[in-house]
Length: 285
Ligand code: NAP
Image (cartoon, rainbow, N blue to C red; front, side, top):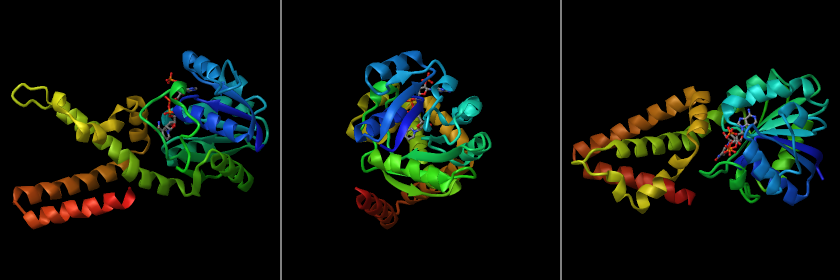
């Protein structure tokens, strides 16, 4: 047992899976759920994800050792602000948001003295949302990034790290800005491109044909993540604006490079371009 009381605010895919994984690992005593979506919260209770549900976040954090916030990134600081006065002394507040610089600096300023904020981001997910989509194996052998801020004590970092390890994740620690630049490239840019591709092809007009009706395995594999929650991705794009814009600019340069090689019928250049990409891709699977 690592902690007695865990409160999960936002019992969706990430919050629900975290609760299920910790329960299965036997490292937490009692789990309280809080969510603005009452139907989702009732589902979380009936699925055994949480032991009890609270009327609101203030009631939910009473007696908590750790509060895990897994709501859209733009809403995390507002949640911390709303619970700040009710947090028990010594409570650790942590999150699962996909953006860290803004979240950590906002939340550090909001946790009361005697409490700690530790930023977290599990590198695992699916295109589905809500408690019904949660499952305990989601974080198995996936990375989880922990970021420390002004209020992260060594003991709080250790507890959060041990919880994610118990959930099956490989934990690594990094500075929030470094996190945001890395995940702009490897996660936020691919989502932006997948949405853009489906958008462009969906709007394409080839002699009045519905082009999407011809989609097959390649298009569907490539664009799976464009079925993710649009509001979640709107918030991530806005919260990691600078790093994502830099990634989009880098990608635009790469696409322009490819366009030039096609336009000039540069056989050797195209072979080199595709071979380099294939080698990178083969290296990660
Ligand atoms: P989700 O399945 O939609 O669950 C979030 C839940 O939080 C929803 O039930 C939502 O209700 C509720 N909620 C929203 N605002 C709230 C508030 N102020 N107080 C209490 N509950 C609130 O979302 P998720 O996919 O688990 O994502 C949660 C967080 O994890 C996000 O910050 C995201 O960046 C991060 N993350 C997601 C993934 C992924 O692949 N999905 C991966 C890594 C990290 P409503 O639906 O009514 O808004």
